[in-house]
Amino acid sequence: MFGLDINIVAIFALAVLSTAGLAYGLLFSRIETEKKTESRVRRVQAAETDHSKAKAARDRMQELSKRRKSVQDSLKDLEKKQQEQTKRVATTLKAKLVQAGLTITPSKFYMFSAVFGLFAFVLALLGGIGLLVAFGIAFIAAAGLPRWFLGFLVKRRLNKFLEEFPNSLDVMVRSIKSGLPLTDALRLIAAEGQEPVKTEFRKVVEAQQVGLSVPEACARMFTNIPLQEVNFFAIVIAIQSQAGGNLSEALGNLSRVLRERRKMRAKVNALSMEAKASAVIIGALPFIVALLVYLTSPEYIMILFQDSRGHLILGISAVWMSVGIFVMRNMINFDI
Image (cartoon, rainbow, N blue to C red; front, side, top):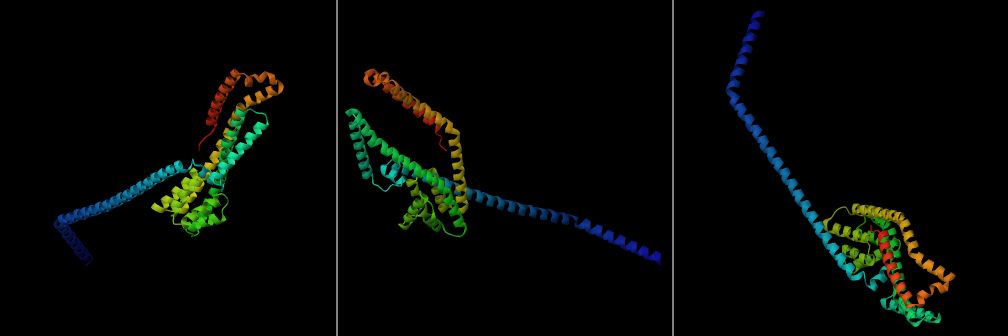
């Protein structure tokens, strides 16, 4: 009975295997066709997916290219406008007075210069100096010294602005991150900032109140503060208003760049201080020697001022001294 059962099971298994083999043989071509079809469908789907991905990537690249071109065009336009504006206002006396933080008008400045020159002329005549030399002193006192003093005030105010400007940008970054809009951040600096940044941002806020947009108002600040750092700030605001983006991150990066520029400028000044001191000593040495010779042997050096040949020598020496000072000045001054 046990052997019969095994034979039946074996016959049944052989029948199943035979049926399976026959079915596989008959359906092999169909199975292969379905496999090839399924593989072809997967390849087509993969190709379509790759094509869509490539198209999406290409669209993104085109969008980035258009945005980059738009930013470049905006930068060129802004740079052109800034150059035109700088050429138009940077050399005028009115612009210099505003940059120095003075409230006087150009007419009052000219009046003060004329009074100062007249005062120097009178002092020169009372000191027994010749009329021609007195006129020269009066011209220098009227045309040279007031403008030199004005330039000194402008440079001092610009340096103060550079010291405080990065701190004001940090305050703006924190304000924008806390949820305040850009206009409120500008008003905050105009109300709570330090001079002279406070005054310039107040002018920006006042320009907005009369109808100017924020980028235009910030661009006008370059007229009063002709610094590259202010130009960078105006460009960042203009690009953000046109192309969008994270303004707090852009201003934070600008603040770091300004601090690094300041550190680099201080490092360059420290490294060139020895050369500047040498240039000052070399430039002042002829005058010091002439003064010492005059104090010890006045009759020995007065021939230079009394004889026509001495006048010629003094004129040639003045020209060469001016050339040497100009060359040394260009050698020790670095633009950052």
